[in-house]
Image (cartoon, rainbow, N blue to C red; front, side, top):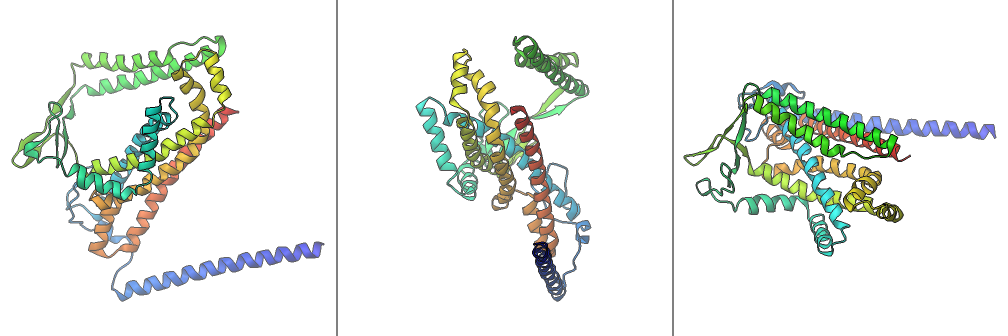
Amino acid sequence: MAFFRSKTSVTTVVLQAAVLGIIFYAAHGLLVNTQANLEARNIASGFGFLSLESGMPISNSLLPYTPADSYGYAFLMGILNTLYVAFMGIVLATIMGILIGVARVSSNWLISKLAEIYVEVLRNIPLLLILFFTYSIALAALPSPQKSLIPFSGFFLNNRGIYLPRPMPEPGFWFVGMAFLAGILVAVLINRYGAKRHRETGRIIPSFFLGMIAVVTLPTIAWFLASTPLSWEFAVLRGFNFKGGLVIRPEFSALMTGLVLYTAAFIGENVRSGIQSVNIGQINSSKALGLPPGLTMRKVILPQALRVIIPATTNDYTSLVKNSSLAVAIGYPDMVSIGGTIIGQNDQAIEVIAIWMGVYMTINLIVSMIMNWLNGKVQLIGR
């Protein structure tokens, strides 16, 4: 018996070594072939091109940028745009997905059916088509800057974008910011005190309401003590377009609209399945105790539903990050769009694609780590 076990072990080791050898041989062949092709086309490999002047304009950048900046800095603008879209998309899709999921299990027939229609329509249409529809039809139908829609004073909506008043902090505004942070800290302390009091005495204090009062009241007091340290810069029509103010470009609006609508349909289904996974007996028990529907949803159903919702939603978050690369189809300068321009100018395709893969993988690994940590906390609470 020992002889056969030893023979099996040796065979396993030999097979594993053979598989590794095949992988290394294939990788070596790919590397040699790639190097030969680059030399044949007189393309220098390496990342030295990142320090060269880009000469390309970028219409949307979170930091100051000019075409005289380097390719590396231009690529950084694309990465920041990708991170911004991913973060905003995850936040907005989560809020909308929760609303859709709760509406799906609503006892109101009309609300439930409307939510069902939304899910079935949005999740069965390719995201690329939603982006094309939003950008080419919905936003392109807006009027020119000279005939802008003005829903509110200082707000202008036209085919060049959405123009909003830009907040301009003045000296003393930091005092308001510190008061806001202090309000959040007070709210957290009130919440912890309320939880402790509930455990020890069984009595409930309106900790959420008291916390919100702290969050609102402290910055308001600081605001007036600092003599309202904030002014607004309004957009003004000069020539053929508006100048000044805060601008949300149509490309960004279309990308966010498409990503949020599409991803919220999947998150809504996750929320629905999570809610329906909760034992009906617990819901009936909460009703028997006299808990109102809102409190039952917040304190009984959602905490248990999160065990089902979080793992599936993690996949949707990572899909949203990857789907943001479709921004290139409507001209939003994300990482893929800017990288594509760099490839067209320098033929550094391998290096640029390597950066794309590395950045997307890093973002999604961070998202997965955060969601796994959150999932662990929820599972721990459930024991």
